[in-house]
Image 1 (cartoon, rainbow, N blue to C red):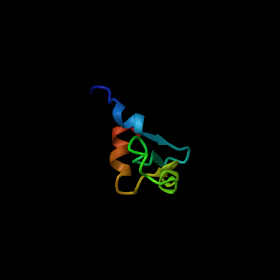
Image 2: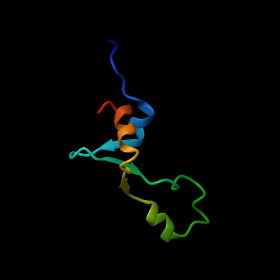
Image 3: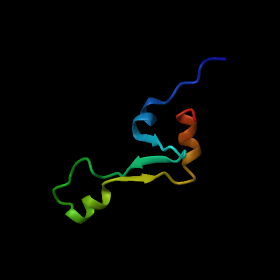
Image 4: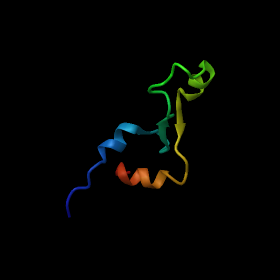
Length: 64
């Protein structure tokens, strides 16, 4: 049986917390920020826990 490898694209986008939850950055804060209000950009900052439906698929890609 070959070794199972971590999907590196997924590993760069998600982190696993100590309790096993998967955390991601919010989308939309890379470019075209000039016309977005400060309120919107603040709302997009920080991290968020991945939805329950997506978590199993991401865990499989991360070998967890």
